[in-house]
Each structure stands twice: as structure tokens, then as C-alpha cells.
Length: 330
Image (cartoon, rainbow, N blue to C red; front, side, top):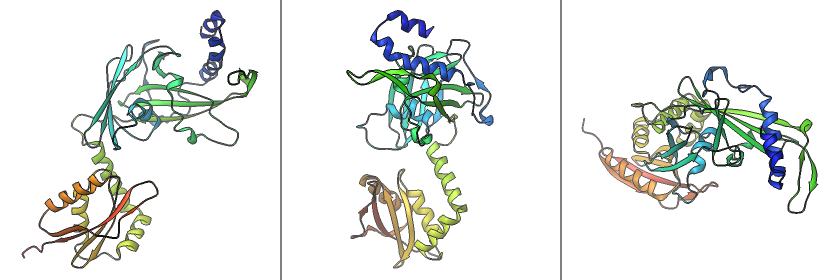
């Protein structure tokens, strides 16, 4: 149907869209669930040409599906902050309202409209939601990069899993062309026998009502992982020295005062108190941390030490804070 539609126009637009018609035909030859982890099955597809159910609240993760539905819609000039979740409302058969939530409580909203393979944000076919090719980011192309492979075209389909997750397949296709025109940028016919498609799967897990905040769960999981990581534990011994009395409690109070986006690099004993090596993105994070630490219990002294401030290669700040707790009466 699409090929007949393209030829009926007889226009230059039809010619430029022809590669995408070839791409859709090649991708359609694959089974919809090729390569999908078995644990993610079965899927809840829409009926025939209707869209799958998309509404829900999902945990944001650095995965293609989260980026495509939420992350890419955050304004570039917004204050840098960690994304925590995204919520989808409405029926995909008409339009979707997406709310992106940050760890610090701020939100950003956007609207995705149903259209065709060549217009608006997405269309639905065979029970899947298909993201319009021109809207798909190349942010994750390195996942399939290889010698002689360049992602010339992208396709993404999304459906709902039985467990409430959203599941996506991202296809990248490379092909050779027979070039016929280079007047305003070379254009040509793709050669069907040269098509190579590489696919990856990603999913967004639901954030259920009443469940802990995703950032809290992620922090707890990371702390539990580090407690079992021999490399991390050895690095801590090298940085902090052998464990000393009160160090575990001092670290516990530091972690409780930590601001999202901050990293504790080391907690080491110094002069009846503790040196805290911290990494963070913005100075207000350090100010908030100092306030929280002061309020965490009897504190005799807390200050940022001079001469230690530095910047990492990724633009984060590093500072050393000295804290001395008041001794508790026995």
C-alpha cells in the first residue's frame, strides 16, 4: 500500500521517501519479537490497526525506550538534573500526554500526536506503536556499531508487556545506494540485497502506586552492590585506610545527608573528626548537603577545607568537607 501511494504522487518527495519504503519492507520480514528476552514475554498488542495501551507511570533509565518517550523531550536549556520517571496519559489511538519527572521534584510536560509513518510523532500498525523514523535519535547507535556498518535508517516499535512494562525494539539499518542525483545533496536508490539490520531491545519498568521513589531504590541497590564489590572495597581501603571505630556510623550519617547527584568518594578520620571527599555537579548541592549534615545530629564543627577544590574531566566539582561530631554522653 505504501509503495503504491509513493508512486501515485510521481514527485521528488516520493523519490526521497522510497528508501524508507524499502526499509519498512525489509524490517517487516523479521519476526516482531526476534531477539526479545523470553522473560519479557508475552506482549499485549493492540487489536489490528489500533494502538497498544501506553498509559502508566514508568521508571526512567538510560535506555532507548526511556530516552525516546521522555528524555529527548526535555528542553536543552533546562537546569541539569537527574531524571527519575515518566508518566504517560491518554489513548495512543489519538494522542499521548507525557510528564517527565526529575529527582528534585520538577516536571516537564509534552504531547505526542498520532499520525502516519511520515508525519507527526508515531503511527500504529499490527498492534505496535511505531515511532516516526525522523523522530528516532541516533544516541544509542554505538550499541551496534561495527566495522563497515553505519546506521542510515532507524525504526522503533513499542508495545506493552503483560507485567505492565513498556517494551521496545530499536532497529538500525545500513545499505548501499545507487546514486542518481547529487545536485542538492546526493540521493539514490537503496540496493535491497545490501540491507543489514541490527536490533536491540529495551524496556521501561512500571513505578507502582505506593512503591518507594525510583531514585531511593536505585541508591539502595547501588549501596548493596558496592558492599559486595571487592574492587570497590579495596579502593575504599586504599583511600580511607583500614576501618576505624566510628567510621561506619560517620559514613551512614553522610549518606543520609547526601543530595541526589552527589557522590561520596571517601570518608577518612582526621583530627578528631572526618574528612569527606565529595563529587557533585553544582555548588547549591554542596550547600544543601552541609545544611543536612549539620541538622543530622549534634555537630561540633563542619566546614569546607580550602585548597582541595578541583574539577573533574566531566565538569563535576570535587571538595573536601571536615566534620567533627559532638561526643555523646555515656
